[in-house]
Picture 1: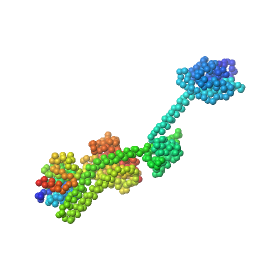
Picture 2: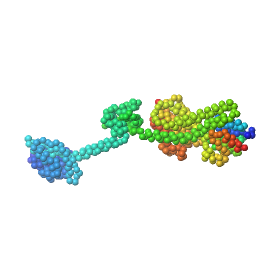
Picture 3: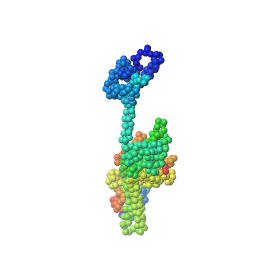
Picture 4: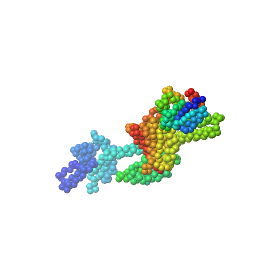
Length: 124
Length: 492
Protein backbone atom coordinates (compact mmCIF):
# COMPACT_ATOMS: atom_id res chain seq x y z
CA UNK A 1 0.00 0.00 0.00
CA UNK A 2 2.80 2.38 0.82
CA UNK A 3 6.30 2.98 -0.31
CA UNK A 4 8.66 1.36 2.13
CA UNK A 5 10.79 4.43 2.51
CA UNK A 6 7.83 6.43 3.85
CA UNK A 7 8.06 6.82 7.60
CA UNK A 8 5.36 8.34 9.77
CA UNK A 9 5.90 10.08 13.09
CA UNK A 10 3.54 9.54 16.03
CA UNK A 11 3.66 12.18 18.75
CA UNK A 12 1.79 11.02 21.85
CA UNK A 13 2.84 10.98 25.52
CA UNK A 14 0.87 7.76 26.01
CA UNK A 15 3.15 4.76 25.28
CA UNK A 16 0.13 2.48 24.78
CA UNK A 17 -1.32 4.91 22.28
CA UNK A 18 1.97 4.72 20.36
CA UNK A 19 1.73 0.95 20.61
CA UNK A 20 -1.72 0.99 18.99
CA UNK A 21 -0.57 3.30 16.19
CA UNK A 22 2.56 1.33 15.55
CA UNK A 23 0.70 -1.95 15.26
CA UNK A 24 -1.99 -0.49 13.08
CA UNK A 25 0.58 0.96 10.69
CA UNK A 26 2.78 -2.13 10.81
CA UNK A 27 -0.17 -4.32 9.83
CA UNK A 28 -0.39 -2.16 6.74
CA UNK A 29 3.35 -2.32 6.14
CA UNK A 30 3.94 1.25 7.17
CA UNK A 31 6.96 2.26 9.21
CA UNK A 32 6.62 4.66 12.07
CA UNK A 33 8.57 6.29 14.84
CA UNK A 34 7.37 7.61 18.19
CA UNK A 35 7.97 10.81 20.08
CA UNK A 36 6.60 11.13 23.64
CA UNK A 37 6.77 14.93 23.78
CA UNK A 38 7.19 18.05 21.67
CA UNK A 39 10.91 18.35 22.21
CA UNK A 40 11.55 14.80 20.93
CA UNK A 41 9.23 15.39 17.98
CA UNK A 42 11.00 18.55 16.84
CA UNK A 43 14.33 16.86 17.25
CA UNK A 44 13.28 13.96 15.01
CA UNK A 45 11.66 16.22 12.42
CA UNK A 46 14.85 18.30 12.13
CA UNK A 47 16.92 15.14 11.71
CA UNK A 48 14.74 12.95 9.52
CA UNK A 49 12.17 13.21 6.84
CA UNK A 50 8.63 11.97 7.56
CA UNK A 51 5.69 11.39 5.29
CA UNK A 52 3.23 12.79 7.85
CA UNK A 53 2.91 13.40 11.62
CA UNK A 54 0.13 12.30 13.96
CA UNK A 55 0.02 14.82 16.81
CA UNK A 56 -1.79 14.55 20.14
CA UNK A 57 -3.43 17.78 21.29
CA UNK A 58 -2.00 17.79 24.79
CA UNK A 59 1.61 16.94 25.39
CA UNK A 60 3.53 17.28 28.63
CA UNK A 61 5.77 20.06 27.36
CA UNK A 62 3.67 21.81 24.72
CA UNK A 63 0.17 22.20 23.39
CA UNK A 64 -0.41 20.13 20.20
CA UNK A 65 -1.49 23.16 18.13
CA UNK A 66 1.58 25.12 19.30
CA UNK A 67 3.75 22.18 18.31
CA UNK A 68 2.06 22.20 14.90
CA UNK A 69 3.11 25.84 14.44
CA UNK A 70 6.69 24.99 15.41
CA UNK A 71 6.74 22.04 13.02
CA UNK A 72 5.48 24.36 10.28
CA UNK A 73 8.50 26.59 10.89
CA UNK A 74 10.87 23.63 10.51
CA UNK A 75 9.14 21.80 7.71
CA UNK A 76 6.60 23.84 5.77
CA UNK A 77 5.13 21.05 3.64
CA UNK A 78 4.85 18.30 6.28
CA UNK A 79 1.32 16.97 6.71
CA UNK A 80 0.03 17.12 10.27
CA UNK A 81 -2.90 15.06 11.52
CA UNK A 82 -4.22 15.90 14.93
CA UNK A 83 -5.49 12.92 16.92
CA UNK A 84 -7.05 13.98 20.18
CA UNK A 85 -9.55 13.19 22.91
CA UNK A 86 -9.51 16.78 24.11
CA UNK A 87 -11.15 18.40 21.10
CA UNK A 88 -14.18 17.42 19.07
CA UNK A 89 -14.47 17.70 15.32
CA UNK A 90 -16.49 20.94 15.26
CA UNK A 91 -14.38 22.50 18.00
CA UNK A 92 -13.72 26.14 17.03
CA UNK A 93 -10.00 25.67 17.69
CA UNK A 94 -9.88 22.69 15.32
CA UNK A 95 -11.96 24.36 12.60
CA UNK A 96 -9.65 27.34 12.72
CA UNK A 97 -6.53 25.15 12.54
CA UNK A 98 -8.00 23.27 9.56
CA UNK A 99 -8.99 26.48 7.77
CA UNK A 100 -5.57 27.99 8.29
CA UNK A 101 -3.95 24.81 7.01
CA UNK A 102 -2.07 24.34 10.24
CA UNK A 103 -3.32 20.74 10.31
CA UNK A 104 -4.64 18.78 7.37
CA UNK A 105 -6.91 16.42 9.28
CA UNK A 106 -8.47 15.81 12.62
CA UNK A 107 -9.31 12.44 14.16
CA UNK A 108 -10.94 12.25 17.54
CA UNK A 109 -10.06 9.60 20.10
CA UNK A 110 -11.24 6.86 20.32
CA UNK A 111 -11.03 6.33 16.55
CA UNK A 112 -11.81 3.53 14.15
CA UNK A 113 -8.60 2.06 12.80
CA UNK A 114 -10.09 2.56 9.35
CA UNK A 115 -10.20 6.35 9.86
CA UNK A 116 -6.43 6.43 10.22
CA UNK A 117 -5.98 4.24 7.14
CA UNK A 118 -8.31 6.48 5.09
CA UNK A 119 -6.25 9.52 6.01
CA UNK A 120 -3.12 7.69 4.93
CA UNK A 121 -4.76 6.83 1.63
CA UNK A 122 -5.56 10.51 1.03
CA UNK A 123 -1.94 11.43 1.51
CA UNK A 124 -1.06 9.41 -1.55
CA UNK B 1 -39.42 81.78 107.12
CA UNK B 2 -41.71 84.71 107.24
CA UNK B 3 -43.99 85.15 110.26
CA UNK B 4 -46.16 87.98 111.41
CA UNK B 5 -45.00 87.88 115.08
CA UNK B 6 -42.90 90.93 115.84
CA UNK B 7 -39.29 89.99 116.53
CA UNK B 8 -38.89 92.85 119.07
CA UNK B 9 -41.30 91.35 121.61
CA UNK B 10 -39.31 88.12 122.00
CA UNK B 11 -36.44 87.26 124.29
CA UNK B 12 -33.04 86.89 122.74
CA UNK B 13 -32.96 83.10 123.36
CA UNK B 14 -36.35 82.70 121.65
CA UNK B 15 -35.16 84.92 118.86
CA UNK B 16 -32.12 82.68 118.49
CA UNK B 17 -34.32 79.57 118.28
CA UNK B 18 -36.63 81.27 115.86
CA UNK B 19 -33.70 82.19 113.62
CA UNK B 20 -32.33 78.65 113.68
CA UNK B 21 -35.82 77.28 112.91
CA UNK B 22 -36.22 79.72 110.04
CA UNK B 23 -32.82 78.89 108.66
CA UNK B 24 -33.52 75.15 108.78
CA UNK B 25 -36.88 75.48 107.07
CA UNK B 26 -35.47 77.74 104.38
CA UNK B 27 -32.58 75.38 103.77
CA UNK B 28 -34.60 72.21 103.10
CA UNK B 29 -35.81 71.46 99.56
CA UNK B 30 -39.36 70.79 100.83
CA UNK B 31 -42.17 73.36 100.82
CA UNK B 32 -43.48 74.04 104.31
CA UNK B 33 -46.65 75.91 105.36
CA UNK B 34 -47.76 76.46 108.93
CA UNK B 35 -51.51 76.90 109.41
CA UNK B 36 -53.61 77.91 112.36
CA UNK B 37 -57.00 76.52 113.33
CA UNK B 38 -58.70 78.94 110.93
CA UNK B 39 -56.56 77.48 108.16
CA UNK B 40 -54.76 80.74 107.71
CA UNK B 41 -51.12 80.67 106.76
CA UNK B 42 -48.90 81.73 109.66
CA UNK B 43 -45.63 80.95 107.99
CA UNK B 44 -44.29 79.76 104.64
CA UNK B 45 -40.73 78.72 103.90
CA UNK B 46 -38.56 80.05 101.14
CA UNK B 47 -39.03 77.01 98.92
CA UNK B 48 -42.84 77.22 99.06
CA UNK B 49 -42.81 80.88 98.04
CA UNK B 50 -40.35 80.20 95.24
CA UNK B 51 -42.23 77.19 93.84
CA UNK B 52 -45.63 78.84 93.99
CA UNK B 53 -44.26 82.17 92.78
CA UNK B 54 -45.73 83.98 95.70
CA UNK B 55 -44.45 86.60 98.10
CA UNK B 56 -44.79 86.94 101.88
CA UNK B 57 -47.22 89.83 101.38
CA UNK B 58 -49.82 87.81 99.51
CA UNK B 59 -49.30 84.64 101.55
CA UNK B 60 -48.84 85.18 105.30
CA UNK B 61 -52.16 85.78 107.07
CA UNK B 62 -54.13 84.61 104.02
CA UNK B 63 -56.51 81.65 104.23
CA UNK B 64 -55.33 78.39 102.58
CA UNK B 65 -58.15 78.61 100.03
CA UNK B 66 -56.60 81.82 98.66
CA UNK B 67 -53.26 80.17 98.16
CA UNK B 68 -54.16 76.75 96.85
CA UNK B 69 -56.55 76.28 93.95
CA UNK B 70 -59.90 75.20 95.32
CA UNK B 71 -59.99 72.24 92.99
CA UNK B 72 -56.88 70.72 94.58
CA UNK B 73 -58.02 71.40 98.09
CA UNK B 74 -61.35 69.76 97.36
CA UNK B 75 -60.09 66.80 95.38
CA UNK B 76 -57.50 65.98 97.98
CA UNK B 77 -59.80 66.87 100.88
CA UNK B 78 -56.99 68.86 102.39
CA UNK B 79 -59.14 71.09 104.67
CA UNK B 80 -60.78 67.96 106.03
CA UNK B 81 -57.41 66.30 106.60
CA UNK B 82 -56.14 69.41 108.40
CA UNK B 83 -59.18 69.45 110.63
CA UNK B 84 -58.59 65.75 111.33
CA UNK B 85 -55.01 66.46 112.42
CA UNK B 86 -56.13 69.30 114.71
CA UNK B 87 -58.64 66.91 116.20
CA UNK B 88 -56.55 63.76 116.54
CA UNK B 89 -53.12 65.22 117.06
CA UNK B 90 -51.75 62.59 114.66
CA UNK B 91 -49.89 63.21 111.44
CA UNK B 92 -51.45 62.00 108.18
CA UNK B 93 -49.83 59.37 106.00
CA UNK B 94 -48.00 60.48 102.89
CA UNK B 95 -50.05 61.36 99.82
CA UNK B 96 -49.44 62.58 96.33
CA UNK B 97 -50.88 65.70 94.79
CA UNK B 98 -50.46 67.18 91.37
CA UNK B 99 -50.23 70.93 91.21
CA UNK B 100 -49.72 73.32 88.42
CA UNK B 101 -48.84 76.89 89.30
CA UNK B 102 -50.13 79.27 86.66
CA UNK B 103 -47.73 79.31 83.70
CA UNK B 104 -45.65 76.44 85.00
CA UNK B 105 -45.54 72.77 84.02
CA UNK B 106 -47.35 70.24 86.15
CA UNK B 107 -45.60 69.42 89.41
CA UNK B 108 -46.21 66.37 91.55
CA UNK B 109 -45.88 66.70 95.29
CA UNK B 110 -45.67 64.20 98.07
CA UNK B 111 -47.24 65.73 101.15
CA UNK B 112 -47.92 65.07 104.83
CA UNK B 113 -49.69 67.07 107.50
CA UNK B 114 -48.05 67.19 110.94
CA UNK B 115 -49.58 68.58 114.13
CA UNK B 116 -47.66 71.14 116.27
CA UNK B 117 -48.72 70.33 119.80
CA UNK B 118 -47.92 72.66 122.68
CA UNK B 119 -48.85 71.59 126.22
CA UNK B 120 -51.29 68.95 124.98
CA UNK B 121 -53.05 71.25 122.54
CA UNK B 122 -52.64 71.19 118.78
CA UNK B 123 -51.85 74.82 118.07
CA UNK B 124 -50.88 74.62 114.42
CA UNK B 125 -50.45 72.14 111.64
CA UNK B 126 -47.55 71.95 109.27
CA UNK B 127 -48.17 71.08 105.62
CA UNK B 128 -44.96 69.58 104.28
CA UNK B 129 -44.69 69.10 100.52
CA UNK B 130 -41.89 67.55 98.51
CA UNK B 131 -41.63 68.05 94.77
CA UNK B 132 -41.25 64.51 93.41
CA UNK B 133 -41.94 65.44 89.77
CA UNK B 134 -38.39 64.63 88.68
CA UNK B 135 -38.18 61.33 90.61
CA UNK B 136 -41.47 60.17 89.11
CA UNK B 137 -40.41 61.22 85.67
CA UNK B 138 -37.12 59.34 86.14
CA UNK B 139 -38.73 56.19 87.46
CA UNK B 140 -41.22 56.24 84.60
CA UNK B 141 -38.30 56.66 82.23
CA UNK B 142 -36.49 53.77 83.90
CA UNK B 143 -39.59 51.63 83.56
CA UNK B 144 -39.99 52.61 79.96
CA UNK B 145 -36.34 51.75 79.23
CA UNK B 146 -36.73 48.47 81.09
CA UNK B 147 -39.86 47.62 79.13
CA UNK B 148 -38.05 48.54 75.92
CA UNK B 149 -35.06 46.36 76.76
CA UNK B 150 -37.30 43.49 77.76
CA UNK B 151 -39.20 43.74 74.51
CA UNK B 152 -35.95 43.75 72.54
CA UNK B 153 -35.00 40.47 74.19
CA UNK B 154 -38.53 39.10 73.76
CA UNK B 155 -38.71 40.10 70.11
CA UNK B 156 -35.25 38.82 69.16
CA UNK B 157 -35.21 35.76 66.93
CA UNK B 158 -31.81 34.88 68.34
CA UNK B 159 -31.46 32.87 71.50
CA UNK B 160 -30.66 35.07 74.50
CA UNK B 161 -30.06 33.32 77.79
CA UNK B 162 -28.40 34.27 81.02
CA UNK B 163 -26.97 31.99 83.65
CA UNK B 164 -25.30 32.48 86.99
CA UNK B 165 -21.56 31.88 87.10
CA UNK B 166 -22.25 28.24 87.86
CA UNK B 167 -24.21 27.86 84.63
CA UNK B 168 -27.72 27.74 86.15
CA UNK B 169 -30.29 29.35 83.86
CA UNK B 170 -31.57 32.71 85.06
CA UNK B 171 -33.43 33.89 81.98
CA UNK B 172 -34.51 32.37 78.69
CA UNK B 173 -36.12 34.44 75.95
CA UNK B 174 -39.12 33.38 73.81
CA UNK B 175 -36.81 32.60 70.87
CA UNK B 176 -35.22 29.76 72.87
CA UNK B 177 -38.67 28.51 73.80
CA UNK B 178 -39.56 28.40 70.13
CA UNK B 179 -36.30 26.77 69.03
CA UNK B 180 -35.84 24.32 71.90
CA UNK B 181 -39.44 23.61 72.83
CA UNK B 182 -38.67 24.19 76.52
CA UNK B 183 -40.56 26.94 78.35
CA UNK B 184 -38.78 29.25 80.76
CA UNK B 185 -40.42 27.82 83.91
CA UNK B 186 -39.17 24.37 82.85
CA UNK B 187 -35.65 25.65 82.40
CA UNK B 188 -35.28 28.13 85.24
CA UNK B 189 -32.55 27.12 87.68
CA UNK B 190 -31.45 24.13 85.59
CA UNK B 191 -27.92 23.73 84.42
CA UNK B 192 -27.47 25.01 80.87
CA UNK B 193 -24.83 22.35 80.22
CA UNK B 194 -27.50 19.62 80.33
CA UNK B 195 -28.86 20.91 77.03
CA UNK B 196 -25.60 20.44 75.17
CA UNK B 197 -24.33 17.16 73.66
CA UNK B 198 -22.13 15.19 76.09
CA UNK B 199 -18.95 15.78 74.09
CA UNK B 200 -19.40 19.56 74.30
CA UNK B 201 -20.20 19.70 78.03
CA UNK B 202 -16.55 19.81 79.09
CA UNK B 203 -15.90 22.74 76.76
CA UNK B 204 -18.91 24.58 78.15
CA UNK B 205 -17.64 24.04 81.70
CA UNK B 206 -14.40 25.57 80.59
CA UNK B 207 -16.22 28.59 79.14
CA UNK B 208 -18.03 29.13 82.43
CA UNK B 209 -14.73 28.95 84.31
CA UNK B 210 -13.09 31.37 81.88
CA UNK B 211 -16.00 33.81 82.20
CA UNK B 212 -15.82 33.62 85.97
CA UNK B 213 -12.13 34.41 85.76
CA UNK B 214 -12.78 37.48 83.68
CA UNK B 215 -12.30 36.34 80.09
CA UNK B 216 -14.08 38.73 77.77
CA UNK B 217 -16.16 36.63 75.42
CA UNK B 218 -16.04 33.36 73.61
CA UNK B 219 -17.53 32.08 70.36
CA UNK B 220 -18.46 28.50 69.64
CA UNK B 221 -20.61 26.40 67.34
CA UNK B 222 -22.37 23.88 69.53
CA UNK B 223 -25.54 21.90 69.16
CA UNK B 224 -28.51 22.51 71.42
CA UNK B 225 -30.62 19.51 72.35
CA UNK B 226 -34.30 20.29 71.97
CA UNK B 227 -37.21 18.91 73.93
CA UNK B 228 -38.01 16.34 71.25
CA UNK B 229 -34.42 15.09 71.39
CA UNK B 230 -33.20 16.51 68.09
CA UNK B 231 -30.09 18.64 67.93
CA UNK B 232 -29.85 22.06 66.39
CA UNK B 233 -26.57 23.64 65.36
CA UNK B 234 -26.21 26.99 67.08
CA UNK B 235 -23.54 29.64 66.74
CA UNK B 236 -22.94 30.96 70.26
CA UNK B 237 -21.29 34.01 71.75
CA UNK B 238 -20.87 33.86 75.51
CA UNK B 239 -19.95 36.99 77.44
CA UNK B 240 -19.63 37.78 81.13
CA UNK B 241 -22.07 40.23 82.75
CA UNK B 242 -20.06 42.36 85.16
CA UNK B 243 -21.25 43.90 88.42
CA UNK B 244 -20.23 47.41 89.57
CA UNK B 245 -16.97 46.00 90.99
CA UNK B 246 -16.03 44.43 87.69
CA UNK B 247 -16.68 40.89 88.90
CA UNK B 248 -18.57 38.42 86.73
CA UNK B 249 -22.11 38.34 88.08
CA UNK B 250 -23.72 36.28 85.34
CA UNK B 251 -23.06 34.90 81.90
CA UNK B 252 -24.98 35.92 78.80
CA UNK B 253 -25.25 33.60 75.85
CA UNK B 254 -26.52 34.75 72.47
CA UNK B 255 -27.09 32.01 69.94
CA UNK B 256 -28.21 31.83 66.35
CA UNK B 257 -29.98 28.81 64.93
CA UNK B 258 -27.82 27.77 61.99
CA UNK B 259 -30.28 25.29 60.44
CA UNK B 260 -31.35 27.56 57.58
CA UNK B 261 -27.87 28.90 56.97
CA UNK B 262 -26.39 25.42 56.90
CA UNK B 263 -29.01 24.34 54.40
CA UNK B 264 -28.17 27.28 52.15
CA UNK B 265 -24.47 26.70 52.58
CA UNK B 266 -24.88 23.06 51.64
CA UNK B 267 -26.74 24.13 48.49
CA UNK B 268 -24.06 26.63 47.64
CA UNK B 269 -21.36 24.09 48.32
CA UNK B 270 -23.04 21.68 45.96
CA UNK B 271 -23.47 24.17 43.17
CA UNK B 272 -19.90 25.37 43.48
CA UNK B 273 -18.80 21.75 43.37
CA UNK B 274 -20.62 21.28 40.08
CA UNK B 275 -19.02 24.43 38.76
CA UNK B 276 -15.61 23.02 39.70
CA UNK B 277 -16.60 19.77 37.99
CA UNK B 278 -17.39 21.76 34.87
CA UNK B 279 -13.89 23.20 34.87
CA UNK B 280 -12.43 19.76 35.42
CA UNK B 281 -14.53 18.19 32.69
CA UNK B 282 -12.16 19.17 29.88
CA UNK B 283 -9.20 17.53 31.51
CA UNK B 284 -11.21 14.50 32.46
CA UNK B 285 -12.63 13.99 28.97
CA UNK B 286 -9.17 13.98 27.51
CA UNK B 287 -7.88 11.66 30.17
CA UNK B 288 -10.67 9.13 29.68
CA UNK B 289 -10.62 9.20 25.91
CA UNK B 290 -6.96 8.18 25.83
CA UNK B 291 -7.45 4.76 27.45
CA UNK B 292 -10.68 4.41 25.46
CA UNK B 293 -8.77 5.00 22.23
CA UNK B 294 -6.23 2.34 23.20
CA UNK B 295 -9.01 -0.13 24.05
CA UNK B 296 -10.81 0.69 20.84
CA UNK B 297 -7.76 0.09 18.63
CA UNK B 298 -6.84 -3.09 20.47
CA UNK B 299 -10.41 -4.42 20.14
CA UNK B 300 -10.31 -3.71 16.40
CA UNK B 301 -7.03 -5.61 16.14
CA UNK B 302 -8.69 -8.59 17.83
CA UNK B 303 -11.33 -8.64 15.13
CA UNK B 304 -8.67 -9.75 12.63
CA UNK B 305 -8.37 -13.53 12.36
CA UNK B 306 -4.77 -13.59 11.21
CA UNK B 307 -3.02 -12.37 14.35
CA UNK B 308 -0.56 -14.23 16.55
CA UNK B 309 -1.58 -15.64 19.93
CA UNK B 310 1.00 -13.40 21.50
CA UNK B 311 -0.46 -10.25 19.91
CA UNK B 312 -3.96 -11.36 20.85
CA UNK B 313 -2.83 -11.62 24.48
CA UNK B 314 -1.16 -8.24 24.28
CA UNK B 315 -4.36 -6.68 22.93
CA UNK B 316 -6.32 -8.23 25.79
CA UNK B 317 -3.91 -6.76 28.32
CA UNK B 318 -4.06 -3.29 26.76
CA UNK B 319 -7.85 -3.37 26.83
CA UNK B 320 -7.89 -4.49 30.44
CA UNK B 321 -5.39 -1.79 31.51
CA UNK B 322 -7.24 0.89 29.56
CA UNK B 323 -10.56 0.02 31.17
CA UNK B 324 -8.94 0.06 34.61
CA UNK B 325 -7.49 3.50 33.97
CA UNK B 326 -10.73 4.98 32.71
CA UNK B 327 -12.55 3.47 35.64
CA UNK B 328 -10.17 4.98 38.20
CA UNK B 329 -10.64 8.43 36.69
CA UNK B 330 -14.42 8.03 36.83
CA UNK B 331 -14.28 6.74 40.37
CA UNK B 332 -12.26 9.73 41.56
CA UNK B 333 -14.75 11.99 39.87
CA UNK B 334 -17.68 10.25 41.51
CA UNK B 335 -16.06 10.53 44.91
CA UNK B 336 -15.78 14.26 44.42
CA UNK B 337 -19.17 14.77 42.82
CA UNK B 338 -21.14 12.67 45.28
CA UNK B 339 -23.02 15.24 47.35
CA UNK B 340 -21.97 14.76 50.92
CA UNK B 341 -24.99 15.34 53.13
CA UNK B 342 -23.18 15.05 56.40
CA UNK B 343 -21.22 18.03 57.58
CA UNK B 344 -19.67 16.11 60.44
CA UNK B 345 -16.07 16.36 61.33
CA UNK B 346 -14.08 13.21 61.82
CA UNK B 347 -10.50 12.18 62.31
CA UNK B 348 -8.95 12.03 58.87
CA UNK B 349 -5.49 11.47 57.49
CA UNK B 350 -4.41 14.57 55.59
CA UNK B 351 -1.83 12.61 53.58
CA UNK B 352 -4.51 10.29 52.18
CA UNK B 353 -6.76 13.22 51.39
CA UNK B 354 -3.99 14.84 49.34
CA UNK B 355 -3.29 11.50 47.63
CA UNK B 356 -6.96 11.18 46.65
CA UNK B 357 -7.16 14.77 45.46
CA UNK B 358 -4.16 15.00 43.17
CA UNK B 359 -5.53 12.60 40.48
CA UNK B 360 -8.58 14.86 40.15
CA UNK B 361 -6.59 17.96 39.27
CA UNK B 362 -3.71 16.16 37.63
CA UNK B 363 -5.55 15.85 34.30
CA UNK B 364 -6.28 19.53 34.10
CA UNK B 365 -2.71 20.39 35.09
CA UNK B 366 -1.31 18.02 32.50
CA UNK B 367 -3.19 19.47 29.58
CA UNK B 368 -1.86 22.91 30.53
CA UNK B 369 1.73 21.73 30.91
CA UNK B 370 1.70 22.36 34.65
CA UNK B 371 3.92 20.31 36.94
CA UNK B 372 2.75 19.49 40.45
CA UNK B 373 5.28 18.99 43.22
CA UNK B 374 4.28 17.74 46.65
CA UNK B 375 6.25 17.88 49.88
CA UNK B 376 4.73 16.63 53.12
CA UNK B 377 6.75 16.82 56.33
CA UNK B 378 5.67 13.45 57.64
CA UNK B 379 3.34 10.49 57.13
CA UNK B 380 0.02 10.10 58.93
CA UNK B 381 -0.93 13.66 59.75
CA UNK B 382 -4.28 13.58 61.49
CA UNK B 383 -6.74 16.42 61.66
CA UNK B 384 -10.41 16.80 62.49
CA UNK B 385 -12.15 17.52 59.22
CA UNK B 386 -14.93 16.75 56.83
CA UNK B 387 -12.94 14.99 54.11
CA UNK B 388 -15.32 15.86 51.29
CA UNK B 389 -15.44 19.56 52.19
CA UNK B 390 -11.71 19.87 52.73
CA UNK B 391 -11.12 18.15 49.40
CA UNK B 392 -13.29 20.80 47.80
CA UNK B 393 -10.99 23.46 49.28
CA UNK B 394 -7.89 21.74 47.88
CA UNK B 395 -9.52 21.29 44.45
CA UNK B 396 -10.58 24.93 44.39
CA UNK B 397 -7.09 26.12 45.28
CA UNK B 398 -5.57 23.83 42.66
CA UNK B 399 -8.02 24.86 39.93
CA UNK B 400 -7.39 28.47 40.82
CA UNK B 401 -3.66 27.97 40.47
CA UNK B 402 -4.14 26.06 37.21
CA UNK B 403 -6.34 28.82 35.80
CA UNK B 404 -3.69 31.41 36.60
CA UNK B 405 -1.16 29.52 34.43
CA UNK B 406 -2.61 29.28 30.90
CA UNK B 407 0.91 28.86 29.47
CA UNK B 408 2.10 26.23 31.91
CA UNK B 409 4.05 26.46 35.12
CA UNK B 410 4.49 24.80 38.44
CA UNK B 411 2.34 24.16 41.49
CA UNK B 412 4.01 23.29 44.74
CA UNK B 413 1.94 21.82 47.53
CA UNK B 414 3.76 21.71 50.81
CA UNK B 415 2.50 20.61 54.17
CA UNK B 416 4.44 21.76 57.21
CA UNK B 417 3.85 21.99 60.92
CA UNK B 418 3.64 25.22 62.88
CA UNK B 419 3.10 24.69 66.60
CA UNK B 420 -0.21 22.92 67.09
CA UNK B 421 -1.29 23.64 63.53
CA UNK B 422 -0.65 22.18 60.13
CA UNK B 423 0.03 24.54 57.22
CA UNK B 424 -1.08 23.53 53.74
CA UNK B 425 0.62 25.81 51.26
CA UNK B 426 -0.26 25.89 47.57
CA UNK B 427 2.14 27.97 45.55
CA UNK B 428 1.87 28.69 41.83
CA UNK B 429 3.94 30.48 39.24
CA UNK B 430 0.91 32.07 37.59
CA UNK B 431 -0.28 35.56 36.87
CA UNK B 432 -0.74 36.46 40.53
CA UNK B 433 -3.29 38.81 42.00
CA UNK B 434 -3.25 42.60 41.77
CA UNK B 435 -2.72 44.34 45.09
CA UNK B 436 -6.07 46.13 44.88
CA UNK B 437 -7.88 42.84 44.24
CA UNK B 438 -6.36 40.86 47.06
CA UNK B 439 -8.99 41.94 49.62
CA UNK B 440 -11.82 40.93 47.27
CA UNK B 441 -10.75 37.46 46.30
CA UNK B 442 -12.66 35.75 49.12
CA UNK B 443 -15.85 37.68 48.31
CA UNK B 444 -18.62 35.61 46.75
CA UNK B 445 -19.00 36.00 42.98
CA UNK B 446 -15.75 37.94 42.68
CA UNK B 447 -13.94 36.57 39.66
CA UNK B 448 -11.33 37.64 37.17
CA UNK B 449 -12.10 34.65 34.94
CA UNK B 450 -13.92 35.17 31.67
CA UNK B 451 -17.65 34.43 31.65
CA UNK B 452 -18.28 30.71 31.79
CA UNK B 453 -14.88 29.84 33.22
CA UNK B 454 -15.22 30.68 36.89
CA UNK B 455 -18.21 31.33 39.13
CA UNK B 456 -16.31 33.41 41.64
CA UNK B 457 -17.51 31.10 44.38
CA UNK B 458 -14.53 28.80 44.80
CA UNK B 459 -12.51 30.94 47.14
CA UNK B 460 -15.43 32.25 49.18
CA UNK B 461 -16.66 28.69 49.70
CA UNK B 462 -13.15 27.56 50.57
CA UNK B 463 -12.92 30.39 53.08
CA UNK B 464 -16.21 29.33 54.70
CA UNK B 465 -15.16 25.68 54.82
CA UNK B 466 -11.78 26.46 56.38
CA UNK B 467 -13.47 28.68 58.96
CA UNK B 468 -15.80 25.83 59.80
CA UNK B 469 -12.69 23.74 60.40
CA UNK B 470 -11.49 26.33 62.94
CA UNK B 471 -8.72 27.29 60.54
CA UNK B 472 -7.61 30.27 58.52
CA UNK B 473 -6.82 30.84 54.87
CA UNK B 474 -4.41 33.49 53.70
CA UNK B 475 -3.01 34.61 50.40
CA UNK B 476 0.23 36.29 49.44
CA UNK B 477 0.75 37.52 45.93
CA UNK B 478 2.42 39.93 43.65
CA UNK B 479 1.30 40.56 40.13
CA UNK B 480 3.28 38.28 37.78
CA UNK B 481 5.10 36.36 40.48
CA UNK B 482 2.35 33.88 41.23
CA UNK B 483 0.56 33.49 44.50
CA UNK B 484 0.62 31.36 47.60
CA UNK B 485 -2.43 30.27 49.52
CA UNK B 486 -1.86 29.05 53.05
CA UNK B 487 -4.50 27.05 54.88
CA UNK B 488 -3.86 26.70 58.59
CA UNK B 489 -5.71 23.92 60.42
CA UNK B 490 -5.43 22.68 64.00
CA UNK B 491 -3.70 19.30 64.37
CA UNK B 492 -5.36 16.53 66.29
